[in-house]
Figure (cartoon, rainbow, N blue to C red):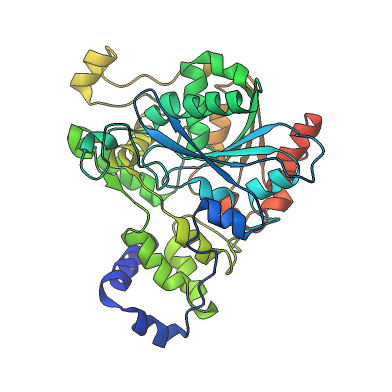
Length: 405
C-alpha cells in the first residue's frame, strides 16, 4: 500500500504540479551542484581524474567504461578493481555519496586502479554498431543473461588487456553479482580472471524477497513472457517520469526530505535512514538509468523459477531446454572466492536467500551487518559505507580475511 501511494504521488507531482507550486510549498530550490553531473564531470568536480573507454561486445553493443586511474600520490598500484552496478542503475552509483564515502573514491584513495562498466541499454551504453535504440526494438532484446555472457566478459577482457594484468577484483551490487555468477557458471575460464568477488546485497534466488516490485514482476512475468518481441522496449530510462518526479521533490529544502525519502524508498525498508539529505538529491539525479522491459520481467521469472535460465514459456522451453521449465544455472563450477555482505533490513536480497546461494558455491563467506538500518540501496548510497562495507573489501584484499561488524 505504501508503494502504491508513493507511485500515485509521483504521478501527481509529474502531471499536476509545476515548479512554482512546489517552490511555494517547500521554499526555494537548493539542488545539489552534483545532482545531474555525468560520471566524468562528477569525478572531476569531486577532485578526481577520470577516463572514458568504449568496449564493443561480440553482438555489437558499444559499452561505456569509466576509469579512475592510479592516483599520483600512490607509489604503486595495489591491483585492478572493477565495480559493477545493479539493475536499472549505472556506474554513477560508486561516486554518488561523494569523496570519503563512495565506493570507487575509497578504492582509488587506497591506490587501486578502478574500472566502472555500464551494461547495454543504460544511460551510458545506448549505442550499437548497427541498431538505433530509438528506432530498432531489437536493441532492447536482452536480459541479465546477455549482460552476463556478452557484456561482462567483454569489459573484463578489455580491462585486463589495458592493464596488462591477469586478474582483477570485482565489487558488485545486486544484479552485478548475478552477472558474474552466470558468467563463471557458463564460461568457467573466467573463474581464473577474478581474484575475488564482493557481493553487496547479492541477488540470485529471490524466494524470500519482500520487495513489492519483485512480487509484482513475478505476477506479470508468465503472461508478459508469452508476448515475445513486445518486451523489447526501454523502461525506467534516465530523464523519464520516475526520475523527473523524484527530482522535483528531492531538489527542495530539507522540509521536503521526509516526503522525498518516503516516495523513493518506502517499499525498500529502513529504520534509521541511511541516505542523507545531501546525498538524496544526487541519487535521484542519476537514477534510474534504464534497461529493457524484457530484463524487468526477467526478475519476476527468477522469483518464480529460482536462479534459472530464461523462461520462454512451456512450448519454447521444451524446444530449447527439453523441459517444461527452464533449468537452474549450475553454479557447481564457480570456483572463484566470494565475500557476500547482506542485511536483515534488505527487502530485496533476503539473508535466507543469500545463505541458500552459498550452498551452491565452492568458496564463499557471508557477513550479515550488525547495523539494522541497511536497505538494498544503502549498500551503494548509505552514509555508513566507509564504516561497514569498504573496510571488509580492503581488509580482505590486504590480508585475505576480514572482520564482520
